[in-house]
Length: 246
Image (cartoon, rainbow, N blue to C red):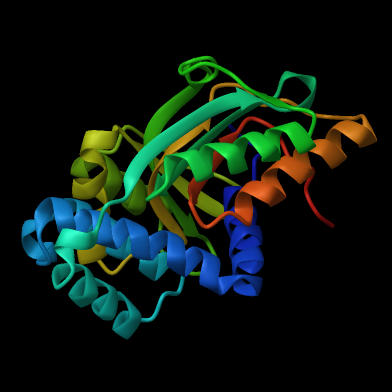
């Protein structure tokens, strides 16, 4: 994974989200609603809600917006009927794409996701067709510009809390955990006031694919942009290695 600038990727994602702040807040709002429905509105007794709150904070969601979302979900539990659906498929040149969605209308979401793949010269495959190319991990990114203490101390803190791996990149530190250990590691770092640029359970490609053909790059961007514009889509994972911006 060395050489992949994870903090730059996260900053790039955040910059995109700043232009469409409503999208990321909609995404997290749905995750809050589902977490409250499943485990109640008290984050002290609901680890899933704690994780969503951490994700919200790393995306600069204001605390009062988070609180409003929790209260709305708590008073509206009966009407929260989002279903979790996952689609897997191929983009141009065999790139692998996984789409996670939360939806109240599976037919609408399926049609929109299918259209995105189709417009980008890709196609949806069967469940499991590409997920074997990814590892599900808890991933915490700490920007060097926000954390200037000894990296060895940070590494020991993370490993002692149960992290699986620690790596140093050019501009950031990456901590990986098993999905079931993510909450404990994140909370241990939070207690030490370690600033996190990103903190979530994600799908990490085992290998990355580079695209050189301009049409392939155009088409995969078409797929990703259409999925990004769909409010039902929560997360999109892919193994295309995007070129670093100057």
